[in-house]
Length: 422
Image 1 (cartoon, rainbow, N blue to C red):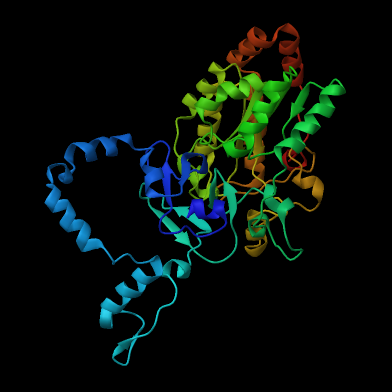
Image 2 (image 1 turned 120 degrees about the horizontal axis):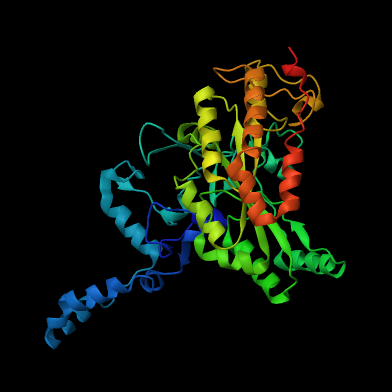
């Protein structure tokens, strides 16, 4: 089904999909290869060809035997439609088109009648690798190359809305892409102006190699000596492409880790989040001389003090080059905002309240914590991270004395919060 979304059409009977890593459960688009035929699919499975040669029963067939089989098959070749007509006619009363003692004529293949469209995928937390799917005709978006329902707190897809009546980003069911040449032309212009540090503001940049691979190769050919940073999800980082990212000038990858607690994380990302060892992913990125920005969220709807502390503990353990830690917000345009309105959750009184660092910041409360408790924990966690001796030592060793002094001075600034004054 994922390949059908990519092709924008149904697959025909002869067409097949190959899993590059031979894991049939891994349906990420960059792991799927379209095959025009069974023969083409076999090219990716040489072990099958070897097995067929070794165990092929026709190896011991006599010439007379082969000739008899050839004669038996002559004159019986049918088109796909003819084969379908024949099969359905033989079904008799089991045929859904069987009426009044005869089978109705069939003029088209049942392939054309297939009508499936998975647009929501929810993993059942109690059971591994089991998914509950809803199949209406709306509310999907691309995430990690699989079409699933939007995560609750996110609204990046709102820019792709196709109607002014859309109520949230989950109703914006399109995705637009700039061509590689267009983007490279923009890089050419910036390079001529002397710009070196560029952020690729695409939160799904490291998802589909069809888009990022040609762009990065184009940047390698240009050799502009750029300092780039972009976004990635921890379960979308493909180690074999990290060297290409490095050669293109990628100096920072911002990882959307969100929460250390697996249950909390999967609740808000609705199942489309494959379990990976986050420490291994961070290590792989650093091994390719790329720095890591770890993004965390505290105060997600099911959070309590314990799960938020787990997230802080993970941040301190990973000790990445820098972090962002946000209180959870029901941002206008996100599915979480629609849910908050529906369930009468308390929301900010003004737009300043949706700002993460403002005096009026007002995050969501959780099932177990008040908004004030969430904000207090967030500000305290930020201070603990940026004053942690292990982190300060990393900054001094990797970026020098000036960067170290900047962090020390920055951590002395305490944010004023209206919600915490009392």
